[in-house]
Length: 461
Image (cartoon, rainbow, N blue to C red; front, side):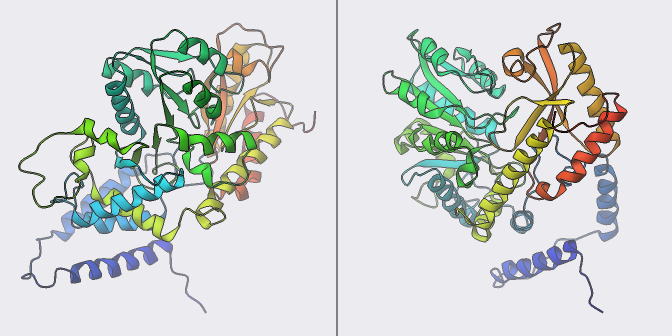
């Protein structure tokens, strides 16, 4: 009879083997072992495990609520491996090997978007990546406004305030994408320095029409920053709508890019990345640190970063993941993205065939948003909240999203607008296994809808 080894035991055995190899690199040093109170550590770990049970099951396919994607096992193990020596990638003194691995990993991200020559580094996440890009933009276009779509991440407005730069929102079309005509009017005011193109909004996954935005740059002195924190990796997916594919491919013409490996890059938090097409912007970071940058004349990552101490373990985890799952069209990494995209389109099709629900638009990437059909915005919103609550009781974890009229009217043309926004249901089908779990997800959604009092399913109407 064969013995089934739990994946956790396999992972821990692999980590032990890697740790032994790491230790062999320091075998010349005198023996040293830190004291370990095994019982105390055990008690603390078990207590932590008990506390962590008070979480939604982010790792499970029945969780489709927020943008929470489990890191790949190789990323978890590589991060743990590096944490044994805890490198700091601010300076080569604190992270020799991990700094080199970060440069290689960032170069692979730059190559993904079509850049050879570039400047970039890892950071804590998309917010920090966007902050650095907008800071550089402010230094190059001082006193000039930043524009982003009304569906862009809320942190852009906050970051502009932090930088002391005027910020304005550009209206969106019914699919949640920035309206190029409205953008042109805003740029025509003559005070705009930077346009943020969102390559996958966190609300609906909408991808701004970057080619049209870049065409405006050709006639105005503005920078274009692509916030691809969520959607950037979909460059590798072959099953996108051609318009979406063209927009993502156009990122190679942007001035700067933010991309988050801790979303679709299979990494633990926090691992973001900022990239600049023109390496000369590195001059803006110039500073002196007589006690930090002294062991090498090579570039220290701290010399091109607003952050100081940064975990070298994040770079090691990303490097190892790229080593195991290269960024190749048709490869295993890309296949996972395509599976998420397939799951989203199938979910949207199933919802469109259900008379109780109304998808707002076909998904651009792998986020699906739908309204509950009702007579008024208030009734639709209240029904969505009831379904949300009932779904959670059945271990199906969705999200809620308040959507504006311009994004709802096409799906619900006869809706009475007694409220300015409609609360909709939202699913982030970010796990490749969601393709195989759709029937279960739909069955639980149906049961939740019935319990919420919005009737039994009726397909095809």
